[in-house]
Image 1 (spheres, one colour):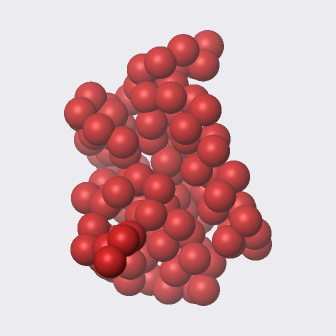
Image 2: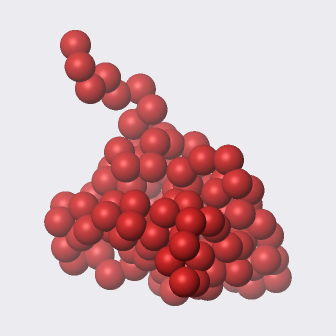
Image 3: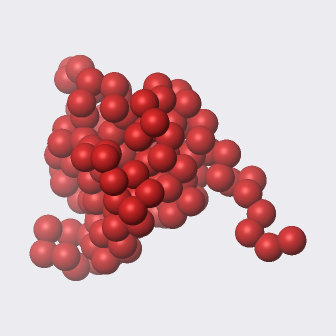
Length: 130
């Protein structure tokens, strides 16, 4: 099953999004929150994100969603740290909440990495209010 890593500057935000994904995809055990620093303070840590990617990997790839700015840079660095390892981790350009939900449901249905990425990316175009 495609893994999922949720990267936020806030530990609470990442954990909250993981709580939501656990509700919509309760059988998926490869969803990992990588929010905040080790001590739960605000920030991002490429090494922690890299470890989360390793934990989420089950052989089908890992989708990484990040909140903003340096979270994206930290996620990119985390993926670079995996160079030489047999892990296909992809940072996805999608809203972190909506994209995480779509990715979790699609992955839990057994979809392939590219399909999970597409589901997450398509949430950019979803209108919330008509």
